[in-house]
Image 1: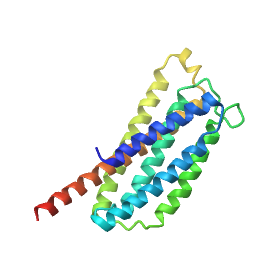
Image 2: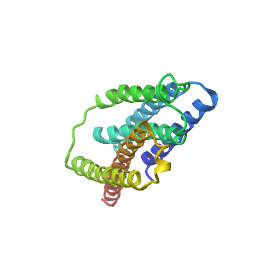
Image 3: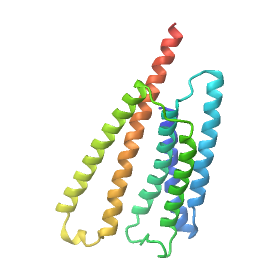
Image 4: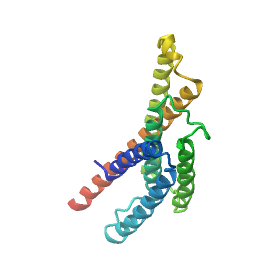
Amino acid sequence: MPQSITAMFGAFIVGISLALSSLLLDFPTGWVGALALAGWAALAWRRWARLERTTGLEPGAPERNVRFYAVGTALLFGHMVATLAYPDIDIHVGNGNYLAIDSWTMIAAMIAVGFAVSRAGDIRDERDRMIIAHGTKVGFLSLIAGLVVFSFALGFVPAIEREYLSLFMAGNIQIAIVVASLLIKYAVQLVEYARDTNANTVIGDDE
């Protein structure tokens, strides 16, 4: 499994843990996620610089952007999944919990750190364009599939069950579907990048 996919899974678990910790401790934990995301980006950047000096197998700027947004999106998705697991909790700002504030804090950190990461450039070659297009296609198809399934679920779920599904909760579920499709897109792109790197490494060893 590519290290980048492992990092995504780890960020997902961290997001879940932060949401549950906030509920249990009645304490904002979004800043912890923000610092963790910034720290991961800094460590990853140092590792990429070391690879550039030693092996020349460091990820290019487009792949670095994909890796960062994959980890950041996984962190937010984990937090969102844990939040949606408690439909009886009103997550509007000012309703006795910090879940919404935590989410926006991590989004702000993702935007800020993402801007710094993107400053390295985003020049794409033919390989990047093919990989990014493939991941985008898979992500789009997964988005359509998720929305179709959710629409049918809304149409066929018993009326008594629909009473517990507020418009606000339904909207958040749809947002979760969108975020999940982004994760699928990034995961496909990262796997493709890993395969391409491994193939080039084998060819280089053979030569």
